[in-house]
Length: 172
Image 1 (cartoon, rainbow, N blue to C red):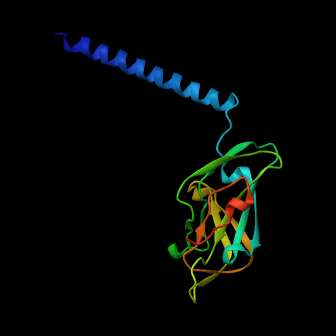
Image 2: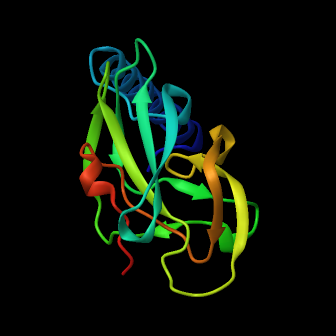
């Protein structure tokens, strides 16, 4: 059995070895990112536009394009979006599975469709803006002016897609 001071020295050496391993892991991870692995897109990396479409009872097509000099991957999940501060104005997924991620650079674009009222009901609240963020990062959200006032009841959104025809939010 080791004496108490010897055990303390062994514990300190083990802690230093673990800390050194963590530093080496962090260094390897950061050099992988800067060594050509393209990052996931953040809201600040992209320019967004909104257009109105008539398919599926009417929806808004959100187009994302990388800013000049940016190359990143947009995850194939639906955007975090809401029309207002009410929980009732938050979009839900229109698709059940994750889609392929989209590599954005240069002129490539990604598309998501948001149907503000996929139900055939009267009423709803009206909004002129859409608040959008990626992967739930609401600290870096953008506010997009809608081309027309949206009447909102149970809004849904598609995942991001490379082909606009895949981003039509058909009601379930």
